[in-house]
Amino acid sequence: MQFELWSIWHILYILSPIIIMVPLYFILRNKSYKTRYIIGVIIGIISLAILIVRNVDIYLRNGFDPEIIPLQVCHFGNIMVFIALVFRSKIATSILWCLNLLAAFSSLVVADSLANYTDFFCIRAQAYLWGHLFIVIGALYAVLLKIVRIDIKSFLWGIFVLVLLLIPSIILNSYFNDVLNYHINYFYIYNSNGVPFEFLYIGERAKYGWFTINWIYTILLIVIFSVLMFGIYCIQKLLYIKDKDYKTYNIFIRQNKKS
Image (cartoon, rainbow, N blue to C red; front, side, top):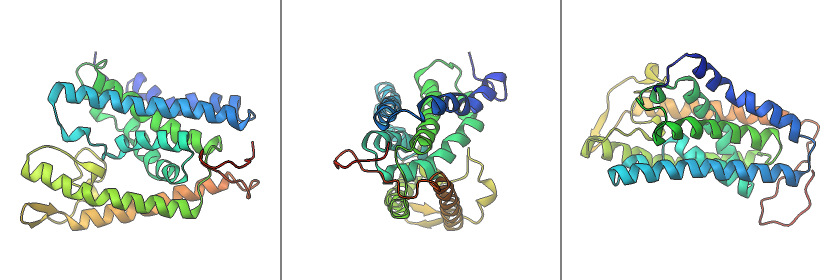
């Protein structure tokens, strides 16, 4: 069995975050913070487990493969869901809500990679299906159920963490692709293949020994996503208009919180 783009199943897949989150929100919105947190922990553990199962499967089949390194935006997102919901991390939530949510939902809509699997029930295909879905659900859950509130400080720290990850990603993209002949695209920053950024890919790749980079594409992508992330951060602020003093404390801090 093979997944077909724009079939009834694909449309249901695109709508699935809404189908799941709407009843979940109305069931849990008036429950205690502890109950909402426990459900969040379960979502976080499942999200991380999906990534682990996927990577173990790749390793057992192929040995080391750069695909195992969780620098793809959505693979990194599965880890962010776990950290955000289990540890109530503001920084992880800012990354999850402002970046991974958009990227993962785009992967639900533009599911070409899923359609390329000839066996829909293989581990890789199922990891794609559920991995991206749990990123979207995890991001919506963390913010809509008010598990974590993002502030401007955590947003800026999230940007800083992404910059720290982006630098080795750019280097490894070039090393794995140009030197070892793999096909890797961490952070979608090596080229626009398979992602809807073709119009941004202008200019040529500059070469510095074995290292290559398209400076125009890289800078444009970073600027555009920085603006998009800030816009999505501002959307979260609308949820707290009536709760301006709402604070989130991570699990290592003993302090009373609003329920």
